[in-house]
Length: 315
Image 1 (tube, rainbow, N blue to C red):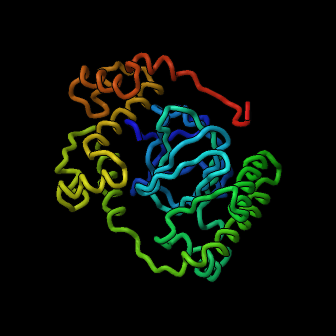
Image 2: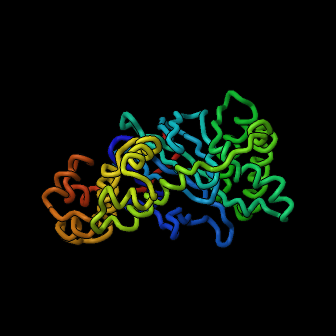
């Protein structure tokens, strides 16, 4: 990823996701008490065309409508474009970005595994073998493969059905269809017994320290201590999964948090710098301009107005 990772959802320009205590994302579901989240985004809504890395209990499917991007899942880089999507399993670290600063409009469809769990037996037989199988962190989806094309088509139809009066019923039906398709086509992968990577758990602990304490003094030693590993191993894990050093990640995260403050309120630039952990406002301004190509004031003026867009325009 270029210089930053940040997540925005449609209509939430300038807002970072809400997190649980374990630093997983809390999703704003489409319907009350129905744990499904479907919508569209465009990559250009994100600073430097790059999302914020995140993880959550929900499984996720990304279907590009226009343009292209790269999706990082636990350090694996997947190229996405129309006709090529990806299924991301529960609790995998992931984010999308553009290498060439070009846009990508895409549909996202996420649902919590519990919407599939009609009974305990159903959960143990059909859901856990996929969501709790570390050998299936993600599945590439290609329209050239019939069963994968069906999933891509179903996700597009789910988005189109959101405004239907009985949308949850229709969505539930398609979610079961998609899950059945995934289940019957991952027999070989499900035979593999694999435990979750301890490095991913360590990384999440270190990211939690940064995400919760970015406004205070955070050192490389503190980051490594959060993962109970050496500094050298800390660097290795960050480079492996996030493609940048812990200190560079900390800098970028502070800058991303500053964008939220710049868009949402009128705090003086000096106060914004202090709030996100910079002790030197001049350094904050220089680092911000280097990352985003704009000064903090210029960024504030540009992104204060909310944007709306038609995901199907010119497709």
